Image (tube, rainbow, N blue to C red; front, side, top):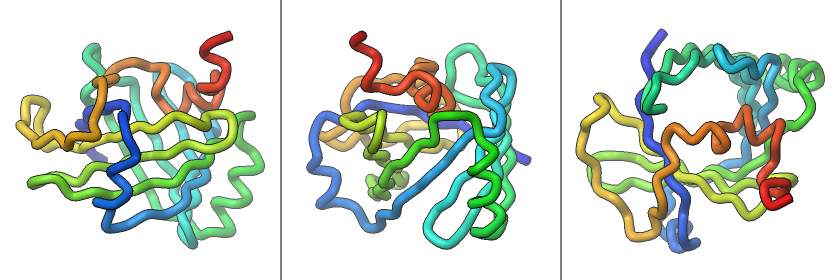
Length: 158
């Protein structure tokens, strides 16, 4: 069990793709998307994961996170039990200084949304910001995947 500390940003160009050292497709759903806790099922290539996240602290920088690897078959079965709004995205991993940014390019109902996250060891930790990094959206619950599954990006302008 751990405390997850991360900052989240919009991405202003696709130039990150040429800097990526890895990419993979993710499919994920939520068994529970309550504001106090979320229970997520994720399928990443041939592996599955079950993740429980607690409520974020006020500034949105940190929250409790527990994750367990499960089989692909278990993840596929659990995805069928998830709330409506399964998320599909391609994740790119980019090294910048001492950190790795995870950039998610969303598909389906969240198409045109690109979000970057960087995990930190402490809330005030310094990190280099790549030129393609845009506006910070840390703590903006609209960008939580659990919220994107319920209120997709394509509906924000309606």
